Amino acid sequence: MASLRSSARAQPERTTDSPPGTRTSTATPTTTTTYLTMAVTPGPIQRSDVGEGINSDRILSIQSHVAFGYVGGKAAVFPLQCMGYDVDVVNTVNFSNHTGYGYFGGTKTSAEELSKILDSMDKTGVLTATRLLTGYIPNAASLDVVHCLARKLKTRNPDLIYLLDTVLGDAGKLYVAADVIPVYRKILPLATVITPNWFEVETLTDMKLTNLASLRGALRKLHVEYRVPNVVISSIPLSRVATSIPEYLLPSRPTNGVVWDGASSPPDEQQYLICIVSSVNHVPTEATSSISTVHARCVPLIPGYFSGVGDLFSALLLGHFHPVSNPPAHGPSCTSPVATATAHALSKTHAILSLTHLAASTKSLPATDDELDAHEPERISRRMKGRELRLVQGQDIFKSKDPVDPMIVWEKFWQE
Image 1 (cartoon, rainbow, N blue to C red):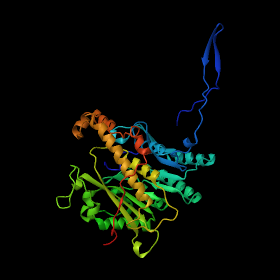
Image 2 (tube, rainbow, N blue to C red):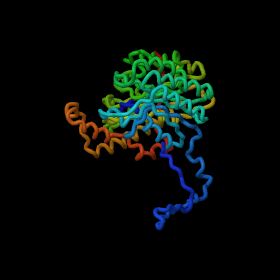
Image 3 (tube, rainbow, N blue to C red):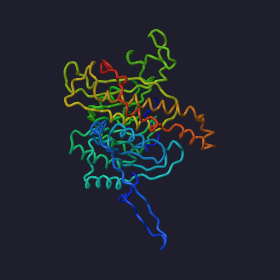
Image 4 (cartoon, rainbow, N blue to C red):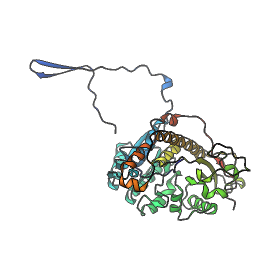
């Protein structure tokens, strides 16, 4: 799987139907042009057709938009609609394409415009989402608007499910202005689930993640100080924590297809990522005295630069998340709702990446070469276009209800 954080985070046409029948317009005093229209009567609707695969929850998605390609909302909305959700969309930017192409154009939605859109939805009575998904927000002023919205929706509906994708950056580099960071910290307590990558966990907690002890410290801070009930850390390079991971969590099958027997050399750590889910324990018993129950799963890397992967993953996680009314104390035999949703999101995201990689491999795309790319920008464009996520071609993946490999409980995670 590619890294789950991508580069940029980036209405149907209104038509007025004419009444059925025949319309006549006089072109000249002696010439008449006749337009025939047909009234279509729908066939009988079967009871089984109503509600099949439809979710009653409505999602408000606030993130970036691109005209071409699949990042931000373009990577999130269609999969959610395939899963049966109605999705209301507010764009934080309107770009031609994602920034990985090297050139892009468009506009950013100002905080004032964002506020006006949301206020108008409220006054019209259409701000009715029961789930909230937020992604790339370009500046602190706009993020303040989102903060106010989240508080309003949470006040009206304490059961609001809010997935906060803390899009800050990746690989040590911020995508946003630094003044966004403290605003994100203010929003954290409102979230049901957050989906930061490794770098974003470091940024939010102001803790450098170098080993398992520092990872424990960061999760403790997110759960206790910022009161986040569920943390999903995506795309952690396995090589960073492999020495601290129990053997049963390590991948059992190397990329060459030979099953690891535990005696020979283990699978190449560089070829895998690990995803970690940490859910706060609800019942403080002796068996659940740890802060949270942690689940994990390794996934194989897919070579190549893909954009919009994190946006897709977060959307799928939200779509598959179904909380229970009275959550039990988590234990080795218990799978949390977030862990279940994460398993589905990982499986489907990996399936889309595999489909995209297969399509790209047939196009003889140019390899990444900074010097050649600088002299021939078309190389970058060809490469980016060839690796746009194949969401439409893979829509059956989103609709699938097939079982997936579960996340695995990381026993004794909190034991020093």
